[in-house]
Length: 324
Figure 1 (cartoon, rainbow, N blue to C red):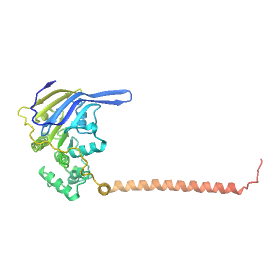
Figure 2 (spheres, one colour):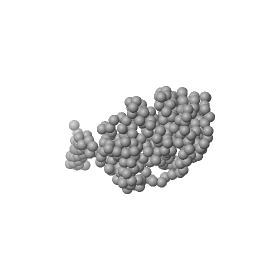
Figure 3 (cartoon, helix red, strand yellow):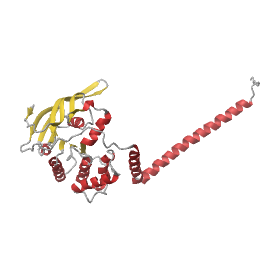
Figure 4 (cartoon, rainbow, N blue to C red):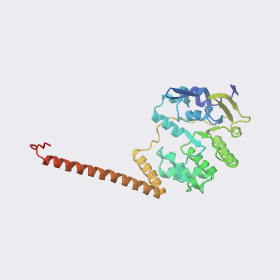
């Protein structure tokens, strides 16, 4: 492996040691990652480059605690992820990572403001606090006048900015961006990469998954992956050294949303989905009414027929015998 030695100015925030990942389907097993060892420090801007099928998305899923390795050790701020229970992993993922996707993954029935607010509902933040923070993030990203627009009313670059704001809503100590410029024109792509650089300058750790070497050249460090193996790990010329302080307390259950608050938020989201498309809602309700009514009528007819037959049988008497 051709690697450039980087000065260890800060302890590793994300540390993967001899990571392997194998998918099993019946008797067929496919190993996607082989002996991957990487250390990423707080404040780095890292690009993971590879062609389709190289394993870069699987690596991103493991980094973001969306998947677990089949072998090896993954530590976040010195905590071994394999030692955590599912709830602790969920808190870790919620409070530590922010995800930016190529297809944006915005909820079409929600406004830009409501899409950005969404992660904070699972953290238990109050409505006023959520709205204020979401408005500040959208304003900082140049979308202060688009807060009430739905995704379908925004351009691709604007939708990606909304997804970046959503990734920052809970802090976004580590930003994982999967092909963030893949669906954008060159100008919008440059703007998105500029925003990611600003996030790095603010102390966030930014990891970009891409197949575009032009995009990768904008990062401070490039990790190349091929056939599930790391083939190169090099710092870009003039790369900034991570000097931001290490974030503390990555693992914890603070901010867990209460049962009542969860019910209220779920009800609001469900109500929005119903009123956003009244025709679909009406047709769905009509179908449910017809289905339930049909079942009731069938049960009533069946019950009446059974009662009539039993009455006829009991009317024959216990002593009567007909021979033909």
